[in-house]
Length: 129
Image (cartoon, rainbow, N blue to C red; front, top):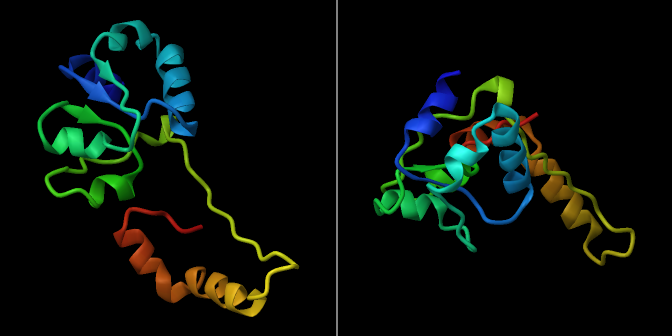
């Protein structure tokens, strides 16, 4: 797998210290049999500074959600993880029955799920469903 070789060849990599993506990546690297090889060259910051560390040249390769990469000057998106190992974050929305702003919340949900917003979401690195 080419992405596996990329990880092994990188001088240093970074991804978040905690979170759902961390659990996923740790398990993925174990499943691929490369966890031990990556351990010594992996930096796991406490804060969401993955893209910043790459942009500043502190770390060669970062793995984080695409919108984070796109929002950091100097960070370059080289692409998503390959589809066979990709993991997606799904956002959902709901309105509380006790909300004093139920209609406004419904309107917001309608807006962000409308076809007109799809190009904007895609431009920010998201894949609307």
